[in-house]
Image (tube, rainbow, N blue to C red; front, side, top):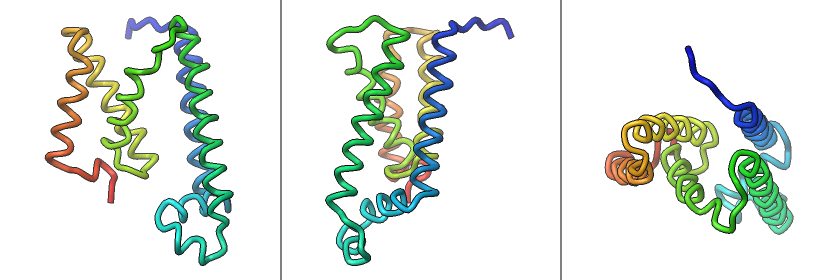
Length: 152
């Protein structure tokens, strides 16, 4: 419909969606994914069921570092590298996770999509107010539905 997108942004989008889906399938389909989800819900009960909690925590830390590395590499293909280049996106990521519902990966995808659409609309009207709009959405969500869109 007349929109022009840079190739690096489309490649970044493709890799981001692919990595997110791969991680979601890992959590849903594998035995280690089930152990991670069990440890996240109740680590004491998971340990009683035979889950090595220390191994699960180490793997989760490693996966978090891997995801942060992927995010940094993908972000650096679109914007210049700086020391504070991810600070604003860290705040937005927290808002996305709370908006979707803590612990809900599909909810985070939906929350990210909603925040992206709203951010684009606000940026079109007044670019300097996009972060303020995110905070307003965050506060309204906490007042109306503190568990998030797909939270329990």
